[in-house]
Every structure is written in C-alpha cells, then in structure tokens.
Image: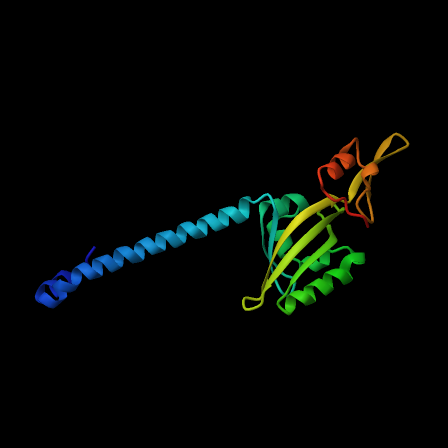
Length: 193
C-alpha cells in the first residue's frame, strides 16, 4: 500500500513514475527472498528438532545452547535443565580428563570424537559417542551424539530386580535375551569400558 502522500510524489514527476515498475519488482523480489529464507530456517529448525539423532549446540565454554527432543528423551532432562548447567558437569568423573582433552581440541578449531558416560536425570550414566565440530568465529560447537549403549542394566538379586550403573556398558552376554548377539550380528559395536 502507498503511504499517504506517496501517490502525489510519484505522479508529480514522470521520472518518479518511470521508476515505479523497478521499485515494485524490487519489493516483490525482497519479499520472495524473505519468504524463501523463512522457509529454509523453518526447515532447518524442523530438521534439528525432529532428528532421531541426538543433537546439541554448545558454546566453547561448555554451556549448552540448544538440544533437540531426542537428546532430552535420552537423558531425561528438559532443554532448560541442560542449559542451566555446563555439560562437563554431567560427565562421569572417570571420563572427565578425556572430555577436557576433547574440549581443548575444539577450542583450537578442530573436531573431536569422544566416548564418555553422561549423567541422566534418573541418576544413571549412559554411554554416548560424541562427534563434535567447532565453529570458532561464532564460539560454538555442534555435536551429533549416538547413544552407544546404555550403561544401566537390570540384574536379578535374590528375586528382586536391581538397577546397576556399570562402569562400562554391559558385554553382549550381559544383555537380556539375544540382544547382545543381535547387536553384534547387525554390525553394531558394543563398547567395552
């Protein structure tokens, strides 16, 4: 819509009237580009949020900026819980040195792959395999995580089920039924402590 007075401005001069089609085309093009950008952003957000892979964006000082739904489901934390505490504070104490070394690699702009245990909201630790790439100009790290294998398993003790947090994932023979054999047969590697 023309602003009040704009029609007088255009009509008072043939030069202004001649530029009108260009101005309209430029406005239409800007709108088209904005809509394309908005659609691309919406698709990227949907991809991030709906991915079955665990995704995390953190700053290079270990602060969690964003996680997807798969990450919150795997750990039991809400996104707000995760953002309230640096991710390193939930790493298993025995894995902390390895996590710090990987973080130092990221600070210099590299990539890191790390397997470590991560404290979940229910108090158990789960093994995750992190693949992280740093974006130093933005001060961010982008991580894709695979749930390597739960480090929590159930063992029968005097007729009662007892949950134990293992210091390493269970061996295939420790898994219920044929799960361990099935995992190895499908080509998945069962992590050893």
